[in-house]
Image (cartoon, rainbow, N blue to C red; front, side):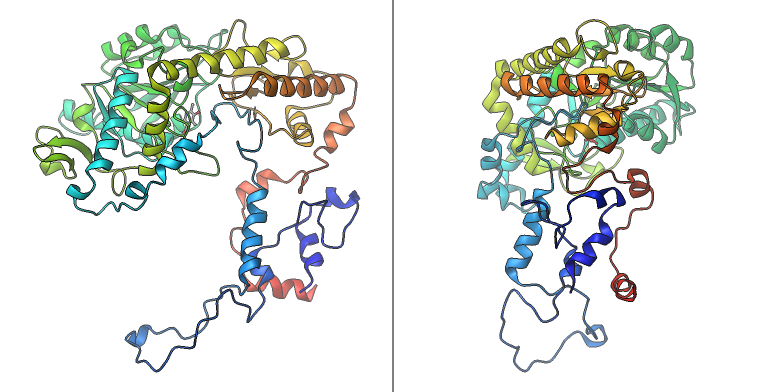
Length: 523
Ligand SMILES: *Cc1c(COP(=O)(O)O)cnc(C)c1O
């Protein structure tokens, strides 16, 4: 089949000015069609002898035709997936300054531990007596997380931060129902306007109305505005600390007292725990629950949608409602409580996930905890904050930091420095791609205009930060010199140029059908 024609179909119009190559490859960056498009009927990766005589036991369920899988040889399959993998930017390739995401190095030691056959080959349905080590490890991670947060209980099973939020808010609802002896009459959850989108989404999914609390001029929760909203209709508040502007919320204790007086619960979004791990125990601030993204603070890999892990620590008030399963120290070692009937006085709200949580992530997180130790984890927080402040200090004279004073683990700029240049935050980010940098988080948080949120994490060296800063300063200078056209055309060196990201998100084409090829042949 004619690859070059197929590929031009995918290429956006903006790319047409590029030097054309026969197949659309550029340098050693190779174009990659869909596996279905390289289908070569009859090709195969394995030669199996034809089966002998046999009688099918499938009866009427016997397959009648082909199932439409593409035919390709083994090297073609290997190349296809290897090329695709190389189109993925990764923390192992370079600086990944994506704010709010804590893209830190994933130590290889973690991977080595996760691949130990005793862990990697264990099955969740094995008898407990044969997986004592795995249960002990889950218990060990739980113990560290409770210690680091100063909280008495934990639910280990949630599979991501957002899933942890779901767990926490379901526990809050269960506690309210229990107190009120029926479905709670409290309808609202308060969420600051700077919150990560998952916070209001979680509250809404759990059936609550979201009531936004404005930020004050310092980028923090406006405590007075919060207090004015409190009444017996409020189920709880969700606050991220450090918040999504990269700032520490200083009024946590007061907020905790006020929400508790009003009969509500305090959810803390712990996605930014990396900035305070080993330095602040959120439990001391009066919170009732908090999820911890193991794939952020505890260095398990993320990006591309997972796998993550979002254990949730719980206060004494919410602990009885934690979902099954959990690990207990039984008479004969470790055991799992899997059903509400075996939960004693506890009233678990149910189960969130098949089996026990993301075991592979627990192993990686545990390796990270044990290899860093108490002092090492504390230094993680200190270095992450130092790195972010270094970037902010070195860029403050040419870019516009959104809030005064030092930041925590990430620094927030807005687009005031681009005023009258004709260059937008989006253009700026696209120009970074040509310089070999994954852009920072853009247009989030929503509370500042044209936001640029940079989180270097503790794993970037001073040299890599200096390189990044030099590129940023150069781009700022080019924008201010009136190079708007070049910015509008960026990126020019990537496999794809500017895509219609909205259309891609709103009407994604997720399925290839044979008709696609027929339609093309007719063109
Ligand atoms: C990452 C993040 C989340 C969501 O966590 P996931 O693991 O991606 O579901 C929630 N809140 C904040 C502040 C985050 O940064």
